[in-house]
Length: 444
Image (tube, rainbow, N blue to C red):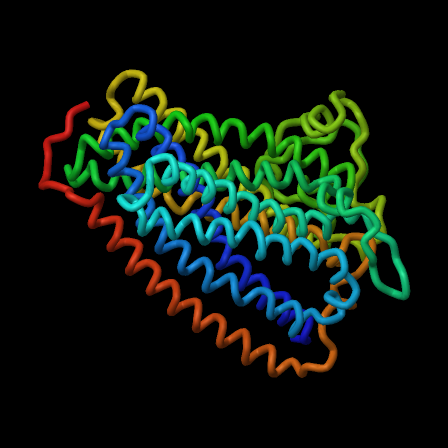
């Protein structure tokens, strides 16, 4: 492999691993703020105990998230120096603002949540939960905005072979920034909902702190149902933005090689970019045309309309996109079943459903990772769409063997971090809330 390919793999591993912690942080921050708000207004101690429990989990996630996040800035200078030189005046602003403002706000406020429950006023403690929520989501916004700028660059001009900022507003709020951020945020809240529901199910199956976790489960299931259904609609809005600004990516997502009227919406298939077809295709006739244009017989442009050297890797992104959609549908089904059981007051007593919730915990993580793989691979061969190709962005002065060494080191390090994280996180989950009692008998 050449240095560029190895660098892409290394950065993909680095950011993909870090994103697991970022997702969990946003999801837990949402639930902590919700529980703290309920405790503040209702003065119900159950909500305080549940919040304290999630804060302990967030502390573990935050430590490992910071550790993995430190790896990424070094990659820009070491592996992507030509990209940094070309785009630094615009791209770098996002990273600087994120680290100085959003991350600092989040880090300080988490410290208050962890160490100062009984040392500050209730108002200040609740405000700290709010600041953790705002800080973590602001951090997410700046990172997503930076990524969106690479997908749909705006607010720049080219001078002396590099981009310079002409409008901070246009660069930050580039054409896909808002919808991508909302889509990412709801994905994180789904992740938090599934995680909280799965942890609640674990304790209910063991008849531990039944009263507490029954309340937490009944809080998370309706939110999971709302978020998963909402995400389906947001996904469509997002895809329409992709169609508008990155049409080659949209055609690859949908597996449309040839321009066609009345294009089908594929639910399943095995892509074959070499022969430009989808094998064993299962789909709904005419539906893609309707979703993209409002007409069942409208023309949908295929990849053949664009130069072949600008095609993204169709096999990869068609597959990741459709797997993501399948996982999303599965989570909607799980949430709707849970909502029905809750409405019938049979949620806790259906132990088969509690087991489903436990085993569903990996689903939103897989869906989010697959979505980002499709997003990033779908931008290829561009690192900045229409401006800079990926093979023009990597460092030229470092031999490929050094990339092999650094990639191997990172993989080994992340294996160790995975072990340590799972050890500490699962220990915190099993320990449960402070002051937990013995087993209880669960009722419906």
